[in-house]
Image 1 (spheres, rainbow, N blue to C red):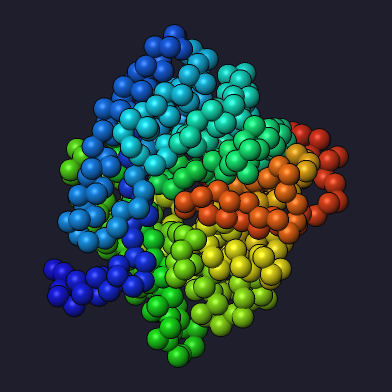
Image 2: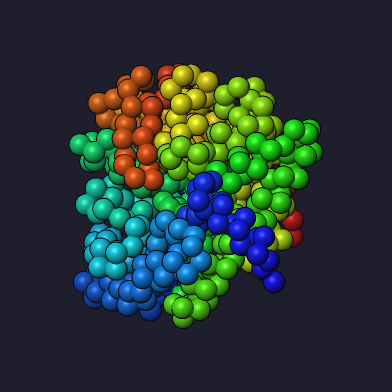
Length: 449
């Protein structure tokens, strides 16, 4: 039973604290679209996405009006395209069909131009990887992800090396737009199959035919709640837990309503605090409200660990199915607190890497000099993969080498992708290490059978 007090509380969160449902993502299985003819496969892909998602935007808008809570993004994720296109080899055709369906339905992004190569890659998957730069350069709404490591398999260093090269090529092909193609490409360790957030969303092979996953957001709500706390860090944690519960209840309501209206299964609610470039919607500002002069100061990792844990503890009790990434995101370009801290030198790549050991995802939406060698990007991916594999958590890298830009410059990606200062990267070379290839074995802790 929802009380009048809770209703007014939620209205206040929406009105002045930037509470929103960050995304409704429809996951669509495309296994029945597979054929040996590339044009036929692409046609089936387009038809199924356009049919299943035709009402997604309208339903999202209706729910926003119904409950008075903004639904910011409406998105689709699909079965990994590397699997769907393997029989025909028509990967690029699938990317174009995805983009056409996204434009037709009016959704914001479509994810699933994806390969899972954590233990090795087939010839078909290697062929798919080669298409990623051109596919992202030729489309507007298609997002791509590659899983190169898992706690069970270890780290596929051949794939890691390849991804550094792919990121560089993707950035080059979109160099006239501040290398935005690389902002639509994520390299994962321990990728999850029900993530509603872009650019890493894909529809897992163990999922139903049509599923609704929702990502909530409430950094402004959490910060506003902490502004009223004078107590110790236990009181801070309790406040975050209670606030996360309220925010997640909104997400649960929206997810179940959307699933019913769209004739889909309710999948999960992702608890992640997802920031935007808007003033008052920053995870960095939450950490500063806890007592840090600037995010990036000593103590940042501890404060983020507290926040992430409290969000999970509060949110998990508010939804019948929690999944996705569920924590706190720290994408530099999408968080005004992170942007300002990076611009003034308080937040460095080294501090960001430490922070990723205790929160969702990893080195996310970080702009680096355009002349950064591919092997350094590969090494960044390897470092994040190691953190994920050892700690049995999802980590990722979305680094953007912005062609023509150097440290001190900035890049602008627009919308929720925001803007990013070009951050300094260590110039010492990992080339010999990356060139060795092979696999870094799974940790002993993975042997749990």
